[in-house]
Image (cartoon, rainbow, N blue to C red; front, top):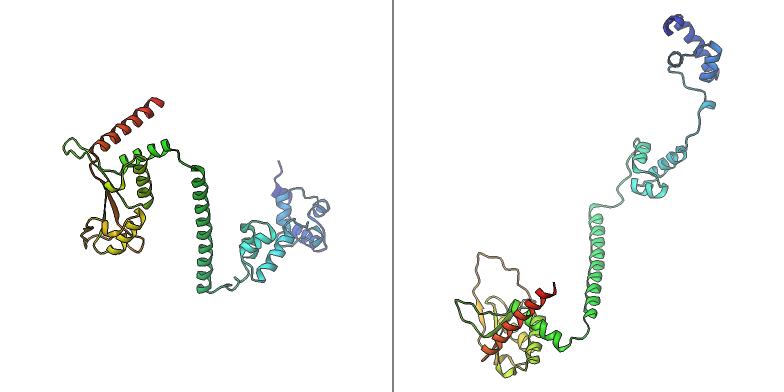
Length: 285
């Protein structure tokens, strides 16, 4: 069988003819037919280095996008901006304009930091607005509490946060300690529901010695509706210099201790109520 090289032994002579025809403006197909060369590899080797005539170039769909991308890059646009403008991928844009000089930075480092901080502030403001709106809707979902609902909430609240009797230490008395003013408010409302006279209550503040002790006493006294002079002596927590406290600042008011005098019977009922709630929950599942 005749090989391609054998068939076209006069390669250099064929190349001269092919190049001449190429320069005259003929296409590869025309050269193929004119010289009778039907081996594409040989044909391409014959005209290697000779650009095709302009009339044989087919327009590509992305030629206009490429030209526009280069124009926008020269105007100083970033890849992201060009992508938004033209709707093409950044990988294509990179290939099209990588030989062009990078645009000068639009902002100084200080201006970029200011823009970033401004955007972060707006984001946090939006998040805070969403947070408060969620809380508002949830608060409205509660509506008014019935006496039974308040009763059950109070039992659970005390059993979670109040002092409890232990087999090794008899403590059958009602003692509640908390730093959350909302918890204190609900606990006092619960005691009112149980007809516990306010005269049976004793209050005391527990707070770090480095805090605003007098301000905390006044704060809690106002919350519970008594004069701070009626409070028992404040318990001061000694500061450990090896620890770093996070509960500092104007919002730190320590904890309020509420003690109910002559409350052994009330404590026993609370424990019984809690056992009743546990049993009811268990039977409901």
